[in-house]
Each structure stands twice: as C-alpha cells, then as structure tokens.
Image (cartoon, rainbow, N blue to C red; front, side):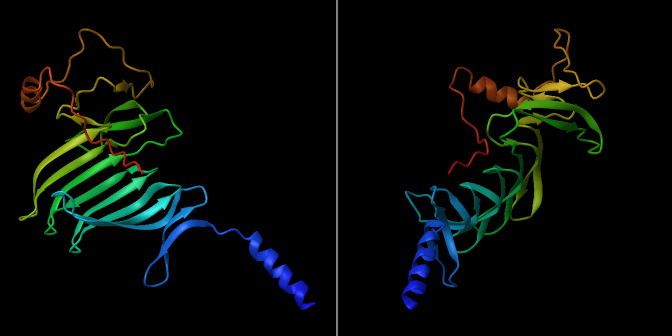
Length: 235
C-alpha cells in the first residue's frame, strides 16, 4: 500500500512541470528574474549594470510580462540615488517619464504614447496650447511599432527646481503655438465634423518652422539623418 502511495506521489510530482526555466532568489526568498519554459521573461526583475568604459553603472527594477517591460520601472545609481522612473506598455515607453541627475535633482519630464501592436493606425486629438480643453483637430498616425513623443515635455534646472523650457508633441511632431506641426509629413488631419481627411492643396498654409529648426537644417544639410530616440526598448 505504501509503495502504491509513493508511486502515485512520484507520478504526480513528475506531471507538475517547473514553470521557470531559470530564476534567482533574493534575500527574502522571493523569485526574481524568471524565465519561463518558452524563454520569455516574466514577473519582477532586477538588473545591475557595472561601470564600463567611462559610462556610469546603474541598477534597474521592474516587471516583465511575456518578455516585455510593463508598468513602472525604476533606475538607480550604484550609490542608490534614483535617476529615472519610466512607465511601459506593450514593452514601449508610455505615459510620463521622470529623469533625475545623479544628485537626485529633477532634470526632465517626458511624455510618450505606445500604440497597441494589434492596431495598424491610431487616432489622437491635437489640443490648443493656450486652452488645453479645446481640441483643434484629430490626427491619424500609422503604427510604426515604436512609442512616440506625445504630450508635454518639461526641462528643469535641477538645482533650482524651476522649468527652463517646455515643448509639446503630437505623436513625434513638435506642436507650434498656432497648432501647426514641425516635420508633419506623416500626419493626416481629420475633419472633426465629417471624419474625412483634409485634402492637400497648393494654397494650404504651412506652419512656419522655428528659427532654431531652420538653423539646424541649414547646418546639417547634406548630412546623413541622425537617428532619434523612438521609445522602443528592445529586450
């Protein structure tokens, strides 16, 4: 009888597969840095990166869902000072991101928008900078598989804590005071009444580019385009 019970327990145990291919245990016995049987990162993660070739090291902690960063991720210096707090959705930057100096002063606030990977296009509102409650128009953007700058960006003096500069983006396009967009060749405005795309005409007035943009284009004319941060973190 005892032999049968023991055999049943062995069969039961062998039938229960270990959910994690690899993992580590912290001092409290919690499982971290889990990798499932499909090789996908799952659950809470903690990563430590040492100083390397003049680049300062850091520690990062957050949550993975099916191999993609999800929710709040915090980054600290090796001395324990918080230097970043980022938000993720579908493995991409989404919402408000805070960045700090290595002394703890707020340096920059960014806002990003991740697009549902199941959707080919997304529709967003363009708000009046002088009256945030007023919608100027709706725009449709193609899902390029990365998150895009979307919302207000604030640049701070980390010592005084005061705002030095402000920018507003609509899906990677810098919004001007008159509601126009800088470098908006990929944006298609929609009529808020009919929902139809506005037709492009030669008489359509193009928003004037800020002098800083014109100076930059003149200086970098003929050069290869510089890749900019797109919010895609990779794995």
